[in-house]
Length: 290
Image (cartoon, one colour):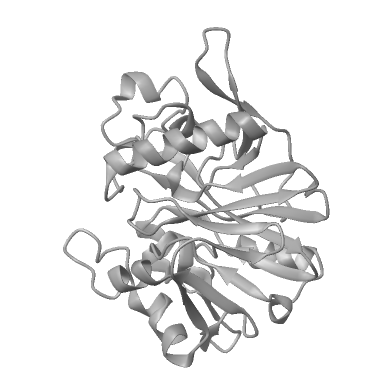
């Protein structure tokens, strides 16, 4: 658990999987990325799916829901998922019931970040994972997600969000806004045009869940490094440039959603004046965090 002033932040790993480096590193050649991450005998690298629980002003707020427990065995095998449902394991370990969650923020609607919006109960019936929560996403993100194209339809899966919108549980945001005192959702375009990151501020301290603005810590260090999944890579680059400045000015604690090596850290300048993430020691707040 991390504390910023009056705000508590809990880091969960919802799922552990193995991914093709071509997706997470895009144009970066193996010679370079292999200095930071190791591939296994299948040429895959180990990946996390980090989500946050933020407790602010008496509210329980989940940021992203990961894969959850709704994927079939075939889907888990296809995605090389070895552990899953860690968000609910983390909440249970903290004594928090799904019904106690007040707000769910979907940073974007790619399936690895919002399949956990729903949950299978012991009888195999699918329903909202957090029955009393207001789910939040950008309006532009939702509009893109309900009209996927050939490039996006494999990850924009309507069952993860359309039923919530139709029931009125999913609320659409129009730009930046405060979610709770000290917690602000900001549009950080590039990965998708309406992708969001979350800024956390309390008692003069700062943190951010960058989500896929920087899937890995090294993505934030190096402006030109980004995933092959970014819809607007040149926009990602400029968005990161602005957030690098903010991170250096505030010494913010940064969370990286898919980095199993460096889930959290702070940006500093090395002895050559280059941005470098300094890892922060932590313990996952759920039993299957690794």
